[in-house]
Length: 230
Image (cartoon, rainbow, N blue to C red; front, side):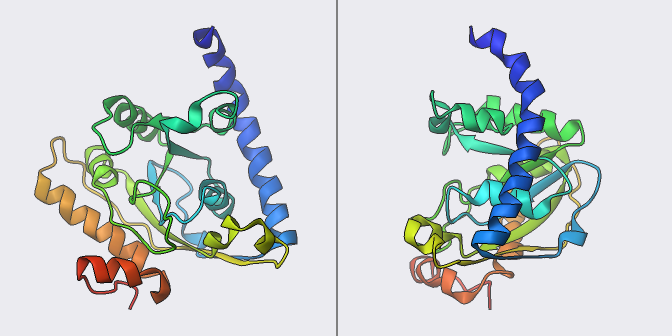
């Protein structure tokens, strides 16, 4: 039965995505103090990997609403695809990934999207922050970028940690999305561990440069690293 449903997801997902994206933009304008900077930097064509920090489950649709110009296909943890609620990420065009392990199916799905000139959305931390502080990046994003040669677009989301408390919505929380400068990546068929590590650091540094210092306290204390937001 699931096999029969696959074509319908492909046909309905774009309509659902754009409808939900523009509806969310309206909601954010009405219920929150929402700002977006750097939207003019979004490349209008070509394979693109959008990367960002991750503070709340609402980050993927909020990031998509901020970009506006292109449809973003997000990797999402496989647990979100369980029925009945799993219908939502499917309609949104997301695809599942087994986090913190070598999920070749997810890797190939991501590369197919990029080969078609699409946009892939990823959070290098691998999961949302449960502390409000930025976490440690994982190498998956850099690996896909190197294998595909796609352009990387760093973004930073600020304020969505407030959405963990429904009462904060009534206070019109200040939420902002900062879109950085895209940078090109040269495709490498078999990236080395050093190349992946170097690109992971660069991606996270680009994101961190757009975040306020308050998001780095736990990260710097735990890892002894300099605050990239300074």
